[in-house]
Length: 215
Image 1 (cartoon, rainbow, N blue to C red):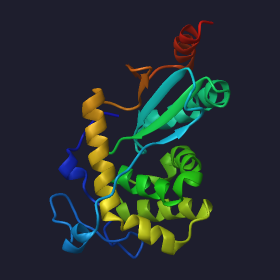
Image 2 (image 1 turned 60 degrees about the vertical axis):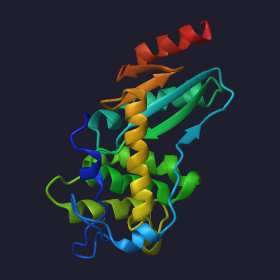
Image 3 (image 1 turned 180 degrees about the horizontal axis):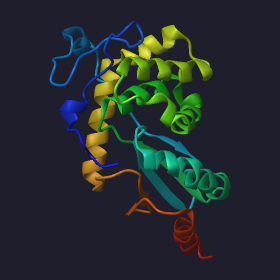
Image 4 (image 1 turned 45 degrees about the vertical axis):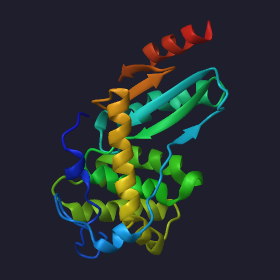
């Protein structure tokens, strides 16, 4: 997935449509003053594996990126089983937000906190083709709520998360900062021990990791 929207165009939290989507504006619309009265939010990426693992691995991904969904369906599952869960790789999930549906999904993924984050990430990618409706934001939002309920979130929790303007701002700002800093212009991308790679097959990834591990 390549960048198709600027940061300012991305800054959309949900629009009230048929009660399915919580409130907030449209591209270029000023956010409610009350939101700015809240304290600034600092966000950090979620990680998996041993922080002292010999290899550091960061994935840059967007919840609306089809290639990212393919990566999680295939490459990530094997990476986790063979390298993350065995203590060889410390994995960081770098959230990328270049469109409004992605930020909606990101707010949902973080709604369950650290314990549910990666479970919701997996569900969002597995069901990506089902929940995204390019022509119908209300239906998309309703589909996201169904995923949230499946993960054990209730409507009150999701309302609070979807209306968290400051968190949305912080997520988008961090995405912009990190992608610019690391030279990321497409998803999925990977940073392995400080070196940036584009999307690749598991076979190629395995060779890179095994070479680094000396085997």
